[in-house]
Length: 241
Ligand SMILES: [Zn+2]
Ligand SMILES: [Zn+2]
Image 1 (cartoon, rainbow, N blue to C red):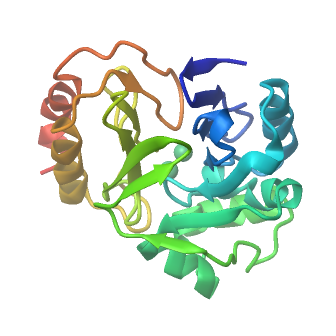
Image 2: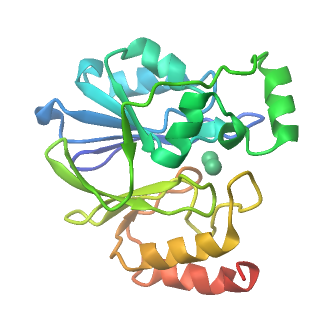
């Protein structure tokens, strides 16, 4: 299972009928202060934790789960992961953190039709995605975790509470579903989405020099060309007006 860089581990999503987000573990293992980013699709918790164990990571060292956003394909496996690391805290941007605490699941399913499909397919009862959030992120703060510095960037547009995690020293970006490889960007038609906000978020991301791009789905990129984000934005700008 790949170690991407010092302090960054990658467990690829296992898409089925529905996509399963990638999961990342960040932090230097010697710090015993690791963070798990995005558990993934419902039913994938066991696979994700097994993969993490195989990388030689001690689950006890995972102190928190940080969500890039709370869509079903990222948060579905959260309670399975919490079952395995019950002491881990949950950190989410406050917009979606507040919704989760209130049991408001619109930012989980994104649209009513998808909610019905998921609830039928997985026999989920309404209210299943109600969680206590230990830290609500604002965007703009720098997290000193795992002997690394990770800037939290609020990048709404795909969802209202989307965040990116950026390590300036290592030039690594974890943008959730906002920016992908192959000049793709996240969809902007679901609950809380906003095309103009997505455009501004891509501008914000383009201000960081990124060498390693670790998106929520599909390919990861280890040598991102300079200007990639701006180039991607230019391609999409006509649709984001
Ligand atoms: Zn998403
Ligand atoms: Zn996703």
